[in-house]
Length: 577
Image 1 (tube, one colour):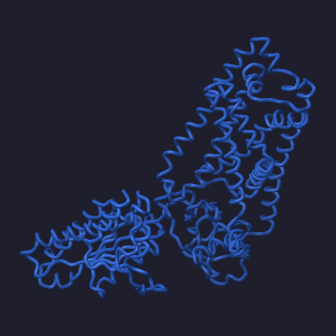
Image 2 (cartoon, rainbow, N blue to C red; image 1 turned 90 degrees about the horizontal axis):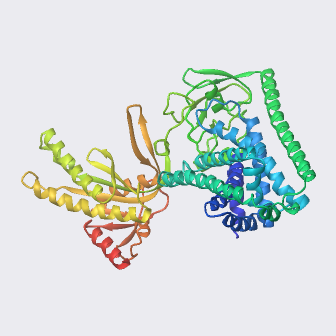
Image 3 (cartoon, one colour; image 1 turned 180 degrees about the horizontal axis):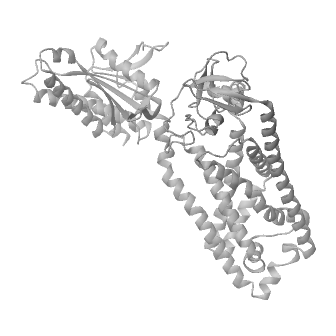
């Protein structure tokens, strides 16, 4: 608890309007999921639906939960109207405009239902549950069934789009996507089927006069006068909501008029391209309006830093960064005041800049299709291996003979990596970077890398034996292994783009490999690898090593013979079994 105040300022800076809207949306989506699952019980019986709704209301009408829920609903609606005002243009080639339209239509469709059920209970103590609502939809007013069906589908699609935008950059999204898609299809399907089955059952039972006398009493559905009054309230609230939308649109018009009168500014991109836009637009919005390619992985929500620009010339007159922008820039380690987020910076005077990230696409509106291609943060294990003595090897051989031996070396290394679940990634001369953990959890990835190191030693032994007639001395190697959070994605230009990993963990693995030369060993493994792999602390000799580029020494394990690593991992797995 003592550390909470320390982190609070960072938490406040990390939370912006979009983050608040996301939090409220998640709360509302949880309610929708609960409601849909309750509807799905209609595939069993109406009685099952009534049992389910008892627990549903028991939770959601619990006073603290109800306060949070209704606050989230009002806040989310208000932020949706604010988003309508705030959005400068609608030419993004994404589903964001669709999500906005769907979200704004929900209050109109749900107003009558909320007033009829919730306000009816508050004002007149109406006990409207599934039998009464299903009777209304399937017998008394069948037209409302279509309105409710449309409402359910719109609410579900709107929520799923929001969840997609939230999770698409998460490391686990690629693996979770098939299951999320299955849930996104099955839940509303079962819900609508449950409503249909329950409604058909109620329609049959309602032909019985006794059922009507038990389920259509005044205390359950109210009087005609009470119903008319509730309808008037719902109508008034709907008109009020349309008034808020009209006010937001009028405010947009007033803003546009004010900006035109306030003058235009020139934005120069540093490559000869200059556009003129009204004051008040963000740099990213200006790029989109004029179809200037501009990198933006998160779509301009300040959830990434790929839209960063460097200001050319004086930056002192620019508006101060918002708390959210300052948080993102601090998170990526940027302290230079000339570097800003294009999606957040709204200049009020002429500006010259250049982009720090070259967009992959030819259109400013285009978005990358998959998270893996545009950058994704996740835990990976990096294994660097390098061939020793390749310079001496080439001195007394024909170039093609040297290439042949190096290729056989890299082939043996790659085979060991692939056999143990890794991915040969980069080939630099006679060295290679292999990645582990693209499809495995960190613990498994660390063990795979250790066994791969042992496999490399074994395969190089076989290669040395095969080439013994041509080698004056056996091929030797050095291996460095380290794990941590890295960024994976496509790096390069045009036809020369490759998938790779970038980050401190990769650099450390390369440094460890380089240290094997001075320590005269075959492999150096970081303490992080052994700890994550759940290997015994005394399994290998520990020592401190100074890593170039790091202020503090790092705990590592030096392995003279890499073949020992396979036995170490196997022994640990047998003990665990």
